[in-house]
Figure 1: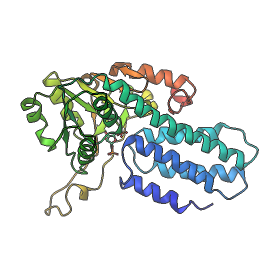
Figure 2: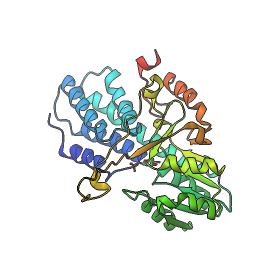
Figure 3: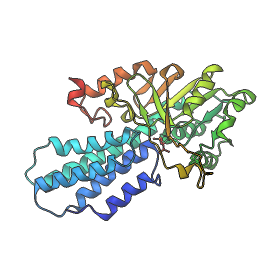
Figure 4: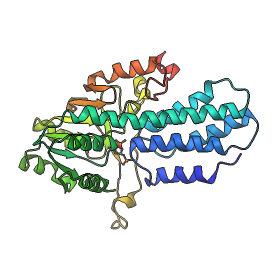
Length: 323
Ligand SMILES: O=P(O)(O)OC[C@H]1O[C@H](OP(=O)(O)O)[C@H](O)[C@@H]1O
């Protein structure tokens, strides 16, 4: 069966970043698999599986870095890949249920990160954040609503300026927020006596390295120099099972036009969307399962691998990765 127009449109939206943010794209992928399953018209189980695999491939191909995307897709598809079904109707139900499970887990995880992470915030804090992260916003908003008073410095986050989204959302909550150019981070750290840095993540590698929006590692390095705690907020489905067996995380290279529409002749433009912050610069990782140091990531991954995926927050168990 032809893929529904709506499925192709959502895949395009993820690619063009009209739907963005590691958690959001994971939820959008689960939702799209659900939508595709519901739109299926045929009556062959084999054909249904092939059709769903095509949707899964299309979704995974949209953006390469955030592991939340394949983790979400694999979680939903696992129900179909491993289940025994009498009819496409049964299989369809399993997909819909798994997708709902994932979305619910994800939304709850973001809320839980807010509760856990907000305990780290103190009145009087001056906090730098980079890009736009639902998990970070959840922490800041929860802390603010619990009565803590602090000031946030949000970087613009060139070239796509997601920092504007953060600044706007925080301002709507009444949180004092100052937008600064990315290049002002070190200067702001010194002049504003920053007390904490909190960022989100797209992927956490087994060694505790944090893959997040380009520029994150420079901020981490500056925080390290100034002994400012560097905190990462992330759901555990951003932990990468692939890195357990040493697979490198692919850094997305986005179109050069995002940096400059018409570069002068002879000028080459590069636009890597993410970078890796080494675990030595990360003080703690706030997850829905609690706060862990980066060196415990491998342990959590190991636990996630061995558990049933529903308990593991949607991380797919890769048979050969644990062998
Ligand atoms: O899942 P949440 O915490 O919302 O976001 C996590 C990360 O996803 C974003 O990627 P992009 O803007 O889609 O490239 C940023 O790198 C952000 O830190």
